[in-house]
Length: 184
Image 1 (tube, rainbow, N blue to C red):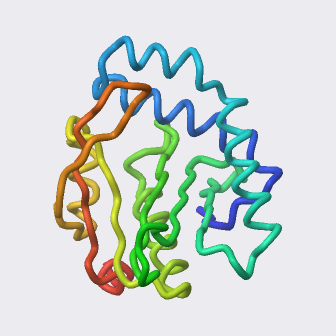
Image 2: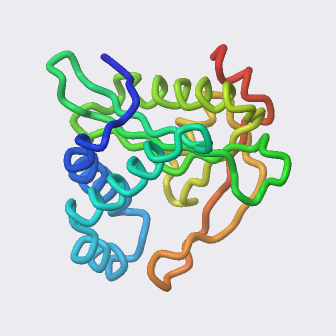
C-alpha cells in the first residue's frame, strides 16, 4: 500500500472512487429521495472536476496552500482510497484542521487503509502548524463513528449537514492534540 499526494491526473479516478464509496456508504444514512437526487446529479465526472479544481489550486500556490489531498494505491497501483483535509478557514489561529473527505473503495475497506490515510493527513497538517483536528460524521453512520473513536477521536459537538436542502444530523469528532493521532 502506498499513500501519496494526489496529482491532477488522478482526478478522474478519484471522482469515480468518491462517488462509488459515498453512495455505498450513505445509502442507509440519508432519506431515499436525497440519496437518489445525489446519485443522479453527482456523477463521477462532476466529482472529478471538483478534485481537479482543488488540485490545480494547490499546485498554483503550493506555499499558500494549507490543505492536503492524498490517495492510497494498492500493490497493483490502483487508487483505492482518497482523503482531503485542510486548516479550518474559520479558525483565526490556524491551528485547527478539518477532514473534508475520507473514502476507501468498498472492496478495500477494513484493511487499515482509512487508518493510514488519517494518520498521513494528520502528519501533513501537523507540519503546517495544525495542532488539533475535527471531522464531521453523519449521526446515522455508526460505522464511521466507531472508526474515528477507535483512532482516539472524541465526540465534541453536533451540527447539521445540508444535503441539498435536507438537514442531516452530524456528530463532530476531534483529536484535541493531533500528536496523539500520529502515535496511534
